[in-house]
Image (cartoon, rainbow over the protein chains, first blue to last red):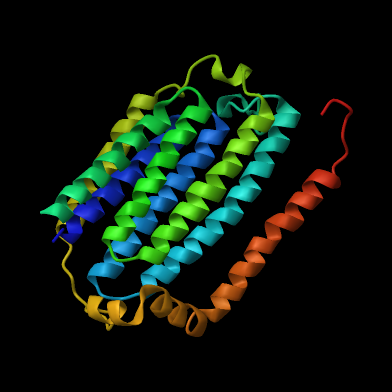
Length: 101
Length: 173
């Protein structure tokens, strides 16, 4: 029997990987993809806790997270396409619309 | 023993392909590595007796969402984007800070105590069927959030229509 803490450790490490990818990559597509990794890590944590606490409601919440992620990705990708058409780049450190100088 | 071996295989593949995925220079390659991560996450759901979620994970995430990313990458023609640095400046500091966060999270996970035992035991789910048990909860207790989720999935459709067709083009596009 696999203990619960192993699943939690895998979930937290995957969340850390997604957060690192969100904070250090320059490409806007990779930022959206890192958000997906973080959502999956949270899903894994929810399902593991639901299995060990013998409840099924966390899996319902995981299904809702998957649905909301699909909507969020659609909005994010369309914003990305419009940004690429306006600025002709996807590097996040070259977006300086709100900078003062 | 077999379960632990399977778990270790899935866990190592998830973490390894995740790290490979966020460090690739080419977005298509990194997307394919992350697709492998999500398929292995589906395997981990199978180990947790959540077979419906495992199938949804593989169909919806690996089959729909990541393919949507792939189409957008093909649409954008990112030859110029691959030149230059992959990471932002001062990325080492951020990696160390997140490693500290993960360290504290792992300590918290190791000290977690199971405090509650719900009615959905493994025998109950095996007798009822996982999809039936999940569907009964989803369509009785969570029916209003489900309708709300339908509206949430309707909003991107309207948003895409407004943003793409209601926008003035400046001729270059």
